[in-house]
Image (cartoon, rainbow, N blue to C red; front, side, top):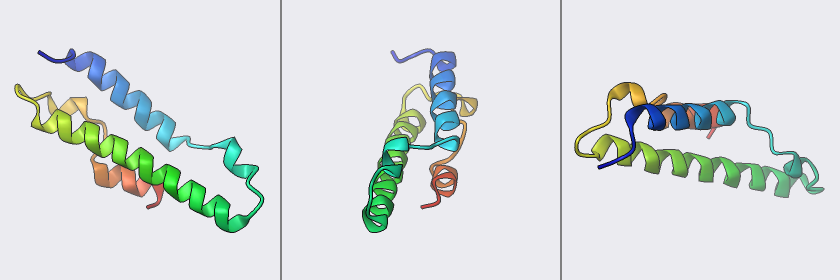
Length: 83
């Protein structure tokens, strides 16, 4: 047994909405531009990895979740995050 598809779809949608509007104010306070870029890059990598893991779980789940549950492919998330 898993989560209801509607619950999963709403959660995935919220995650994607936050990713698309991503702004991490604490990164702006990092003085060194090099460290700021590194922190932003690592944040994007971690967000992508989280989505990729959820996507893999949902697409490999038995019984499978409906395709409409997944808002974006992992590649689309990579594009959104500019990685």
